[in-house]
Image 1: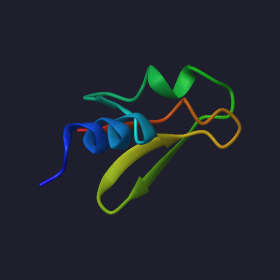
Image 2: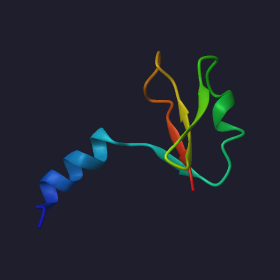
Image 3: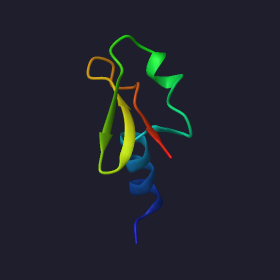
Length: 56
């Protein structure tokens, strides 16, 4: 199993908002894009990496 410390480190690195609706999240920054990957819908932003989210 994973130790608490390594699990916490993983959570910080992969921090992503998970929401039911991405409509408001795509308007957070002008470079946000809505993409579909592996059956999931994501909001990504290549200039400001903190603006990322996943639907579901």
